[in-house]
Length: 228
Image (cartoon, rainbow, N blue to C red):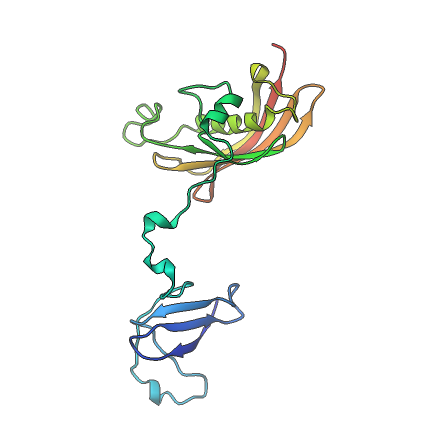
């Protein structure tokens, strides 16, 4: 557990800077606190008299209260996901169309190696009226399908030898669903090619899907290309 020492305090109305001790993994970062119930404690061995009954309350953050961040409205604070491949470019790669095109944007792309893409889950998705009317949850099988489509984006490239006319989702293994995905979530999916047998047109991939940085689905995928 981190301990802290008081660095400066000019008055009860000014901000207070607290620096974490070396026990903290962020020990080099000061905490800026605006006063309100922060109790000031004397150093060991020092007389407590000057600090008797003195209390301040504190609202602490890693950003200076005088910095520009404090004045930025929340709608301007968060940048959008990058767009490496937009929906039109995705449609040029994948044969899927409404209602089964489940990838909205590719945000990271290493052809023949890996891809990270997003699916914006909205209440207007056509599966929500039946799954479930009173509690809209994205079906797990559609999460798997969306991840497989991201795998298709990795695989349907010259480096891999894939073709959109001969692309198949061949199998899944070790799939686990960790948390429900609901309307309003952004599903972030990473698919990585782990093994490729060009002679047989077989690719093995590992996939993970996240919402808010937490894994909601993961598994191993088998992709195949063929003439029929």
